[in-house]
Image (cartoon, rainbow, N blue to C red):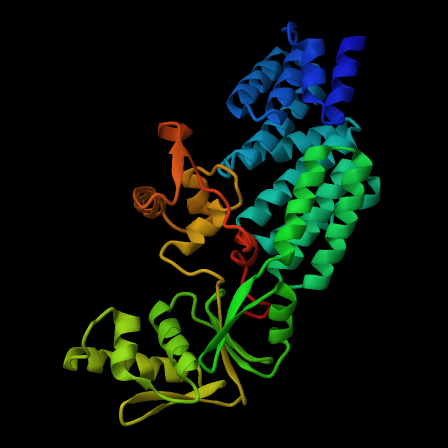
Length: 405
C-alpha cells in the first residue's frame, strides 16, 4: 500500500476527514474510494459515502476479502448513523467473520459493536448484553473502548442503574480523550448531559416534581405502589404487573393513583379512559367491566373499591405514586426518538417503536402539520428530524421494561 493511502488512513483514524481527502480526493482506485467514502461519512455526506464504499467493494479483487469486508463494516456504520435500522445485518455478521478469519480483530470487533448499538437502539437489551459479553474490551483501541463503554452506559440507563451508567460514561470520556477524536468526545459529553437531565415526573398527593435517574432507581427499591406510565406497569418492590397491552386499564390505574387516598369520580374515569364527555349508562357499564378487569390484575398489589361517586384504590402499600414522562403529549414516544438530533426514516422508527410503518407515517404527518417535526428527501430517502427538547431525556427510558416486568 502506498504512502498516501497509509497517511489518509491515519488521518481518518484520528478523525481528520479533510486531511484524508486532501491525500486521496483525485484517486479512483479501490483503497482510495474506500477512504474517500469513510471521509465523506465523517463529514456527514452519508449518501455519497455509501456510494463510494459500494464502488470500492466492487473494485477490490476476489482475493481482497479483508478489504471488501471492511467496506461492509463501514457501510453498516453509515447505515447506523442514518438510522437505517433495516440494513441487512447478515452482511455485517459475515464481514465480521471474514475479518476474524484473516486476523483483523480490530475491525471485526468494531463491526460487532455496530451490531450491538443497533440492538440498543431498538430496545433489544438482552441481545445487546449477550453480544457485548463476547467482546474483550482490553483488546480494543481507545476509540472502540469509548464506544464499548457508551453501550454499557446505554444499557445501564435503560435498566435504570444510574451509578453503573455514570461510571461507564467516566471510562468512555477517558477513552475518547485518549483517542483524540473530537466527535467521539462530544458524543460522550452529550450522553453525560442526558444522564443528568430529568428522567421522569413524580405525581403524588396532588403534587408533581421532576426526578433524575438516581431518584427513579431509588423509587424502584421503595415500598411504594408505583403506577409507572413510562413503562406501562404497576409495581411495588416485589411484584410487577404489566399493562403494556392494556392501555385502558393503565389509564384507570393512573387516575385512581392520582386521586389516592381519595376516590376518583366516575365522570373523570370515563373521560380519561374512554374519551367520553359524560358518563351515560353505557359508559358506566363499560367502566364497571374494566374496573373488574383491573381489580383482577392488581389483586396482589391493591384492591379497587366502589364508592358513592366513583372508585378508590386500596393498596397493600402505605404510599401510592405515579411515575410519568417529563413531558406528555400525543405521539410522545415518537418525538422522544426524534429528539436525539439524528435523522430517522419512518421504517426505522416503526422498527424501534414496534409499530406498523403506516401508523408511524400517519403520526409523522400529523406532527409535521403541527410544526413539531420536519423532513427532507423524498420516497425511501425521506428522513425526519426535530431539535432535541433541552433539559429532558429522550429515548433513554423508552425501550425496555422494568426488571422483572
